[in-house]
Image (cartoon, rainbow, N blue to C red; front, side, top):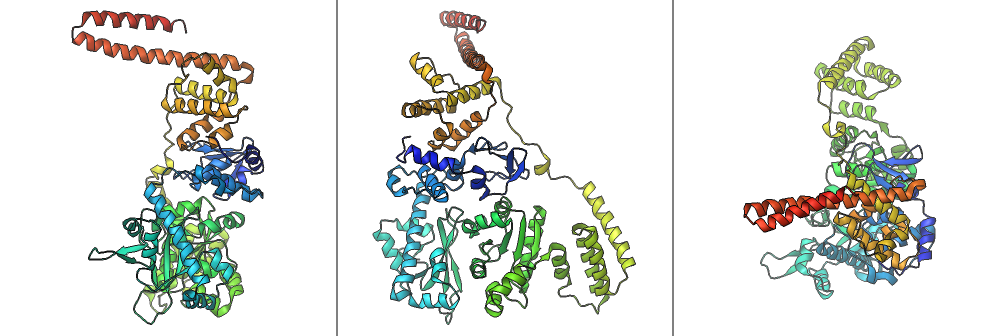
Length: 606
């Protein structure tokens, strides 16, 4: 558990890092009383049960039990080692920590297999290789010129790690082999492809501008290659296939860089593809993210919901873009987002618009003046309808009123009804009758539909037993007082715990106190790699205690543990007694019976 980063540096970083600010960059927090609450990032939930304490500088989820401080939060959310988490916090606080000095302490974070770790290392290596080819070689000049013509600055290229893949069939394959990477694993990771005859491998990406796809922790997990010469029949874009480290439905492009901006603006701009995000960056839209060429998924929506519930959808202006925006709006509406839609004219995508009309107009007129959800739905419904036909008018009115009845405020409802009357030539009185009828239908449907069980059901949390409470309180007092642990070592008493997790924590705590004179549960939890053990520690740290009756509490808890141990031993002996009786071993039966009697008597003295 010993760490090479000086203790005073760790304490300085911790003291200068407010946990609300740290966690607030990853999720939306709302103040309630003295604490802050939000949707837990470690498990899916509809009702906020994730609490952040300003006073104690810790977080705790009452749903899944996750807990910790600012450092362990970064360790868990970004899959960082302790040193990397301290360095990341130190950077924010203006305190430099050289992680390279502590590489021999680096550990592979749980939930990432050794194979997946190798794949991540290979992607990081390839990212640097592609970037070097683009910026520092003659081979990359054509690709660099292409990017500059598209408005990419060198600063932007370096910030996003954009690179270039050589046209050769085996350049990367040969290099990966020389670097000691297993080629079969590299094929599984999507970097190379196995030949059909099984005689070897070849590069997946050739003569393409390479755009790294990063996860929320900024680790490269995939690539998208854009062709430079479109004279052939090759696909415009080629993406990495799904792999153990890349799942399209879980990734949001640019989330790692957009997160702090989203936190500040409290608004997300959702684009259709990663190139839209990069184009919008040129127009100073830095809170943009994009799904990876697939329809928006629930996993992606949950990630967005933790950051903000206000979102602007900005998809392409063609028919496919309209349909995709409608589908996304429906999904986001079901998750209670406040939705606006930025419409692009004449089938343009963000890059087309910026090229034709400039970055300022895109920022002011498109992102700056989006439609609210109802206006978008009305506009969407009106598309492809010919008002010379009564059936089209009737269908439009039916669809429009269904949106107005649900989404609009009273004032907006009146404005929309006037607009609808002008568009269709149907009187406001007739439309009002239709609106009342539609509202009654929807109210009736809501009253008869079954409620969402996942939302309505209370959390299924295990009820704490007497031994649970006793062990937790004993641990809480040990975390607060070094002498509590020291007393058990001196008297060579049994460990005052029953469950294996608590026994493991006790052993770690003994090691910790051998190196640290002062009790510090923050520092102790930070040194543990096991998330489950950290969770137990933080739950104990939150326990309310009576400082005026500490010794009585301590004695009561120790007595409760001793009592439980004897009860367990009695149960074990009784089982042995049954086995002895079945085998007609009378001597053993008599001996065990006497033990049970003595153990039962001993309970009376506790």
